[in-house]
Length: 339
Image 1 (cartoon, rainbow, N blue to C red):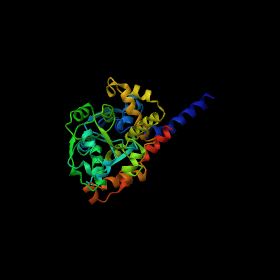
Image 2 (cartoon, rainbow, N blue to C red):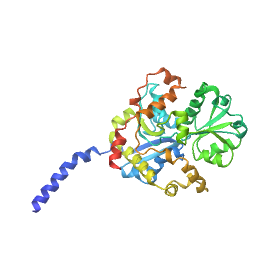
Image 3 (cartoon, rainbow, N blue to C red):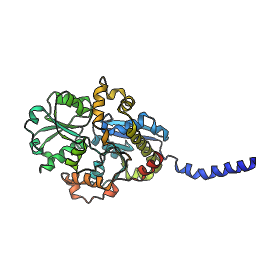
Image 4 (cartoon, helix red, strand yellow):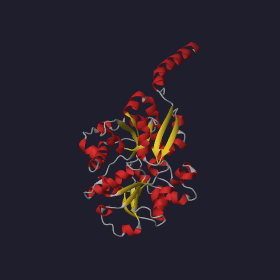
């Protein structure tokens, strides 16, 4: 009997060895860059970090925060970051420039970007053409917030240079610049936007935190914030990539079930400062926008392309293969693991 049990255990061990080998990480120490980590746009990244999901996957993750998504992208292309928590739009705009990056998991379906104007400016606003000549603050030039403004302008036949774009970051500094009246309007995300709304420092004129707002500007299904990497990194580090996606999909699953109170308790205290109530108000405006499974639909990719193609010259001139801008295989595997 003892010999039979021993033989069974040896057999089980042998059968498991290939599976264990497949799970070995090519790289356990990785760097993820992000442009505005405290924004709700990137909340799943913070959840994965705070709840230890990366560590559960055997990863030691350093998250480097930049003022905007364009800077985070530069870190990836420059080799100082392995992956980026950033806008899916960049996978298309970069392909148009002859480079290959792919989104491996989507964090949000809604862009959740808002354009707000000073009260005196908003009183004259009727359509995007009224933005002409204004100074608009964005997280960083070339970021998703900048693309949002360009997309609005394109709807009225205006080019991106119809306004002056000013990088203001994604934290309290952006709030302060708007409050001081140094810019005419701001395209940003929560919690920055809700602080300005509640304080009466801006009037919202375009809002993609809602399903209606997404349909009006983008046509519906969309791929917003994602985690992306170069095609080379993904091919060289498939197990590491899978581990990152596992952690992110697990965070998305948690967000689907968590209460607002649990979410507030999980994020770092500096995210809400002295006003948990205001943070919760902003959170409630963004909860519907998170992805349930982390995958990119073909329609979502197509809608993003249509928006970029309306104003970005490099995209207009290039032949874009959307199938090479995302890879759902990792999110699908993660979904099987974390049902």
